[in-house]
Length: 110
Image (tube, rainbow, N blue to C red; front, side):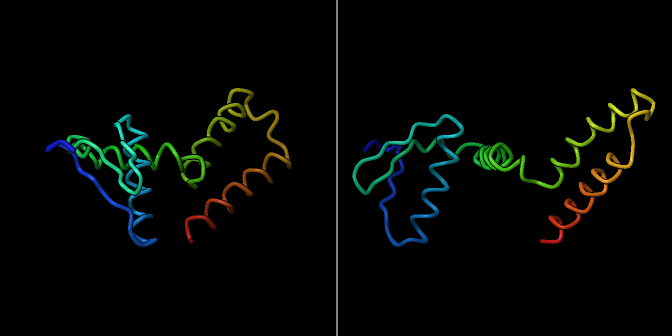
């Protein structure tokens, strides 16, 4: 391999899990990853701005599962009620809002 490449060789399960995570992040950001048997290689430059790549990957993959995302997405529902001057905000809408709040509180405690 070239001098500007990093090659990682698979090992035990915990080390391999780390490699899988690293590869997922690099591929998600568009970096080239080369597979060769038990080896995984990528350019050293792929690690530039890795912190940004890391957070972009996790936000992109897990955003919909975060309590924050659920709360923000419910804002659109509230805006619809505001536009209609709360005409459609009935008992069922209040139950749904309370369910969202309870769900968000539960997820933040874990």
